[in-house]
Length: 180
Image 1 (cartoon, rainbow, N blue to C red):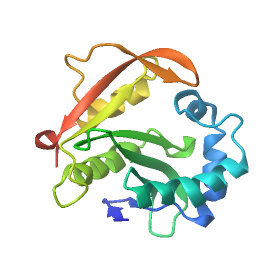
Image 2 (cartoon, rainbow, N blue to C red):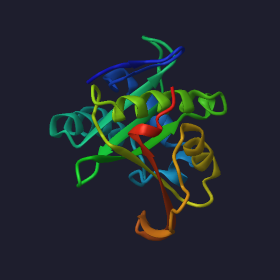
Image 3 (cartoon, rainbow, N blue to C red):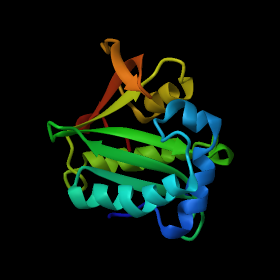
């Protein structure tokens, strides 16, 4: 897995020592409200995420998960996932951030780096990335807008979220749209 670095962040693979931080983060009601996590979220869920889910994604080539850190040896404060779509030339993004790391531009910085890498021919080589937004999650929409996702022309569709059908919109970021 390619580690990514920004001015203040290191994005690398989740590791054994991250299990307590993943567990605590996924108990946060805001994360549970918008991310389709197992219910209830247990320490075993966090262990599965680090020991099985992340390595399987890399081994299969289906998805890549980066831990977000504010330094090489700093604890995990969030995660970003890039999931290959069935068509192959595109991928979808998902992310979460601990409450203490929010509203400081951390996720915008992390996503800008991940999107650049995912769309680069020298990185993951995707032509386009998709961002699914559930109305009501305005922080998600602001984040997608800040990174450059385009929702113009997006038509509402139905997304399955914890077994419930919810209205959603999908934005796109193309290789030619990447900023910085």
